[in-house]
Length: 181
Image (cartoon, rainbow, N blue to C red; front, side, top):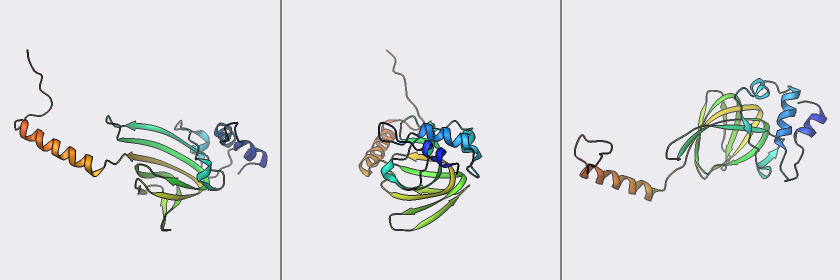
């Protein structure tokens, strides 16, 4: 886990009261002592610092990074890559998130206390509005597919609109039609 000086440097608090993750990442990459986290040290995926809110951290000093990979044209869905070092923390989900673990493993526990172990290759859905406690024993890297759920009223309105469009639009006609002068 590196020497005491490296750990102290890695988690120095900035003037804004947050962990200075830039120094943390530099220290992690310099020490090169996290077993099984070669991808983390090398940062071959060019991930950026994404600090876990200090109030969510329950144990340890986890350092997280992430990067948006894609987003839908309507802004309702996106895909991210994210990694994190050892620690225990809460995560609060305001969107539906389906993850596929690429490296490492993690234990997740829901609000009812039910625990699941996720390993590389495994998938899991974290529904919007839920809270899960994460325990990363060493290192984890995931792809996260995020979707902003819509209210039942909005979904109903969309169904009505589509039904009306089917009545107005002749059979076999799709797309938009240009009007001539």
